[in-house]
Length: 374
Image 1 (cartoon, rainbow, N blue to C red):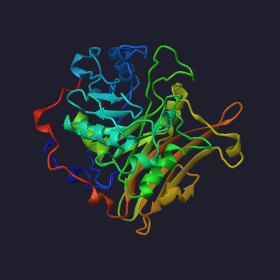
Image 2: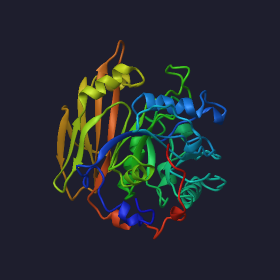
Image 3: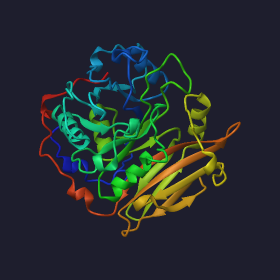
């Protein structure tokens, strides 16, 4: 990838496969994880990386709290499969506003002060100055962020829609919206913002529902090659989907329609492996929730414009809708309740918001290189 690409080029496609080619591949990865270096996780960087290597992931960002872990210093086992890389990163977390700085070449010091909006903006800009891209992490953790905090921010196009840490309230509560509702609020107001899923794992030695374990959230990124720059570019243009347990075999769009298909065998295998912790369907929703697959196409205001109990579906695009995205849900009966896993695909836009994205002629520092992936 040319490190002098204009950001305009990043946003020149509609994501979700509108520019996909036969050479593109799906790469499974996690953008947010911790090691014993932070003081409250239980495993070394090598052991953490080994878990994802052993479980079929293709990339991992070692996003330690306010520390830079150079992939060159993390020893991976030999021999090993070649389709696995570490991408340099950091979780900027000196305030209540936490952000992943992905594919950076050095530490972001994270000394920003001010309102949540000002902190997000400063940390986004600081991340880009050292060659990376920013992701807003777990907005519902301790109710750290509201949509009004995020809406004014420029040059930040990713946020955690789903975070697998048990302390993060993705579904919201009676006083706070879910992260999905927050997303629709931002999209409805004209933002270009895409939803990431991560596990935010801290605990690799104690596996239970009360601990933050690996494998509970990931992204599937479509890119022509497995490299830090290719993954970064695909994330920033929205060519990926987020998952808490569902795999898809098709995500595509053309000027007429948006198409999805479930990868049922791979999803069933992942659920059988036991790392996933499904969402428990509240009793208030159980009576109206059917067991099986459902694909919802969602438009402005979070309104479901088409809903099908099928494993593949399409939805016509409509110029009167400013955006269209999709959610795929699998519901199954557990011993005493219903439980769900989901995948969320990225929006396609029918308005001109992509043309309005603020760009930089050259990302500062890109020509000076970054740590190599391992």
